[in-house]
Length: 493
Image 1 (cartoon, helix red, strand yellow):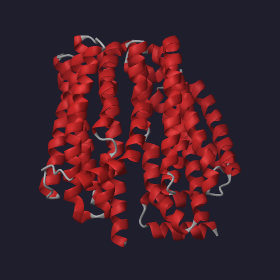
Image 2 (cartoon, helix red, strand yellow; image 1 turned 120 degrees about the vertical axis):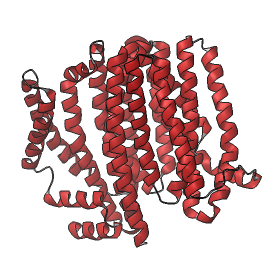
Image 3 (cartoon, one colour; image 1 turned 60 degrees about the vertical axis):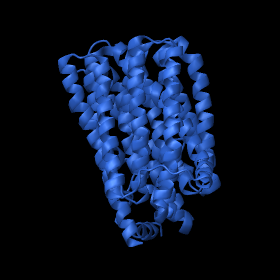
Image 4 (cartoon, one colour; image 1 turned 90 degrees about the vertical axis):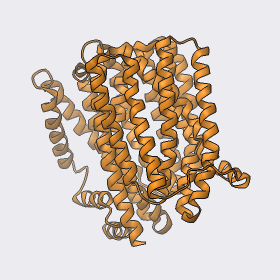
């Protein structure tokens, strides 16, 4: 048991570090290509990626999650499950790839857009198999190979993309940088499977096992479908209903939001095992942990949302001229970030307490609302309409999750609201400072200064205690789940 906990701690550390590096490199690369391409070509580039990615869910449909779970339960059966899933994935990937190409031609896109979609399709097929290969290593409780690969992927894209931009080779070659990185990851993950874990790459047709896998994968697959549609379908609709120029504007807000997602992702990934343990052994401490998680993410997300919203006009200047109309979409999307952050602990709580189906239903409702709102708002307001949809759907997802929380734990919403009000007051005072300084100082000076002021105000408002910081440190360092339980229980008493 101790060894498993130690492996969990290492995996969390590796993956968190890799996630941070990946987001930094990815966002830096986005700024570079946005400055080089301008809104319209940037829109074409990301539309092609989003178009292929939406369909990519049908290449997997939850199979990678099944593979990880079943190998973790029965490592001796790893090769059987892997071979059976290969038997399913190969025809699924071929059929889905052909469907993407057929639809791209039926919709009468330009030759450039179709070529970009073809390259993107090749990328998502390779990435789908790479994800399946790395799901095996996850099943063996090893995230080090996947963590390294995620960073190397971004490094390859960055270096290759810079060379292509320098040579002025155009969009076709630029998206080829993604394909090169996908090929590398595919070969690397293939080596990990065959060379390190010694699994056979030969597909095996076992009707009973395939039927069992497909039955298990349905719940995972449905959630994956809803998640992909929710994340990428707005870009496809925006291109179809408004044009590539507005996709380029919208991507500024989308990428900034996406770059900041590592904060709640890393935080909840660290807390999830403790939540699972508390659900089994200490429901009272589970409620306390949930409250603290909500409080921490409120404290983190409020100043980020307020600060970026106030500095949006300055931030957009980083992307060069032509992106001025991205200011309002960025301001709206960054407000949505607050609700996204707060929703993360709720999703983790539901998953830790065997309420995965509730999460899936909530996501389905949110996706349906998102599609309807996009169809109404995008034709009238373009990128602003898509951003309003993100805001409304984020609030909806949060509300749907909050409705379920009292059914699981007896938490204290008034405590969370008290922290929220204190953080809101500190953020408002910080905002006044930013508004005053932003015309006099560089934003790279304003941001750290505002952050320091915010946390000083928060400390004097007593929004957090020393005990809270100690508990946060224990949760993130994760020396041991048992140690964390014991220490937090002591703090509770």
